[in-house]
Figure 1 (spheres, one colour):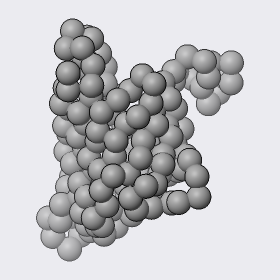
Figure 2 (figure 1 turned 180 degrees about the horizontal axis):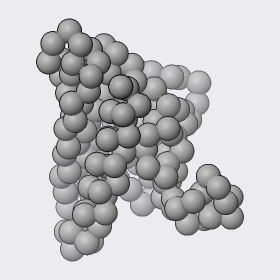
Figure 3 (figure 1 turned 180 degrees about the vertical axis):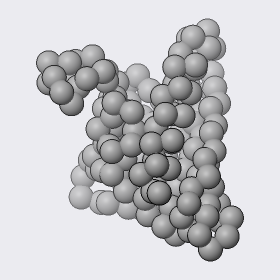
Figure 4 (figure 1 turned 135 degrees about the vertical axis):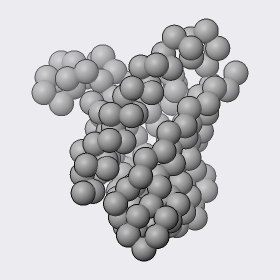
Length: 148
């Protein structure tokens, strides 16, 4: 069963600048809560790019905690700069799809729309949804602060 999550933040940058910041995969490690992100392979952008993200409590400070977390494996399936990037989650635990969309407001402001379709039993999704939303809200607020 597929379950939806979506959030939007206003960013004090042009659409192009926001796009570059959003698709800086490794740079997401600076704003994604408790997450380290890397490109898995040599392709850095476009359809077919593979991205991996490990999210876990304290994994950066204490390597022994690296067993406690989630490895999210993604592949870019649609690429329309500077507007839209779509990914598929194909890891052993997290499956579904995600969309990063950047909407121009004016020459120096944009909106960053983040959405996910997570494949999970409804009961499990309803249990973890509040925690995912809190984590993503914190992460997106950090992203905006980083751009100011």
